[in-house]
Image (cartoon, rainbow, N blue to C red):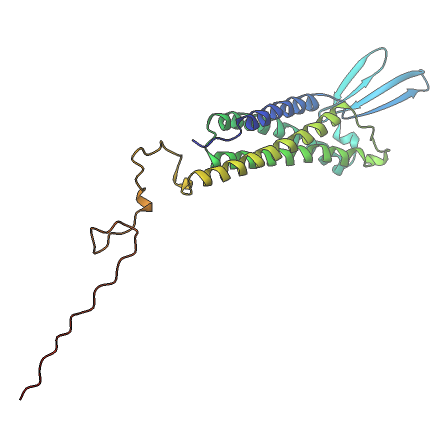
Length: 242
């Protein structure tokens, strides 16, 4: 068994759990963008929170949350941006859980280079989907939807999604480093490691089947040693006939 840094896989899995928690909290909150304004007629301060699922109106008297009114939004590009942010957030939560399960399998089966390569690809996809989620919301927040001023004013939920993306980049770097380190040590331990998982050491110290050469015409000569050239034929001389 090739020894690698098991703590590296454990740390990456723990950070993945933090990313998963951040993604869940960010998706459930309605504070991706917030707007504060004062109603002149009633002289009441309002806070409007925009989330990927709802819009909440809050003041000192009551709190009211409603689903997105796409007809009132009046802009297909803004609608697509919000829907894309919501879809990528949900997909990131589900995919992150799969990455955590795969990380636990990596800790148990550290010898599997193929499993680590798959885990690295999964982590990169998760990083990409987290990037799309908060970037899609930026596209909505910076746009003038239905001739209204941009929302902007990014809230706590958006920053949680951003921090989840940054932490996921650390996981990607750790998984890539662990995969290359394991692959290098496997090659040093056994150049034919791609044939399968390493087995127990051979107590007889005999060459493996793929290390043996074909037998030669000289059975007494050990395998693998150069063979001596054959002796020249004997030349006999006869006298001239008289």
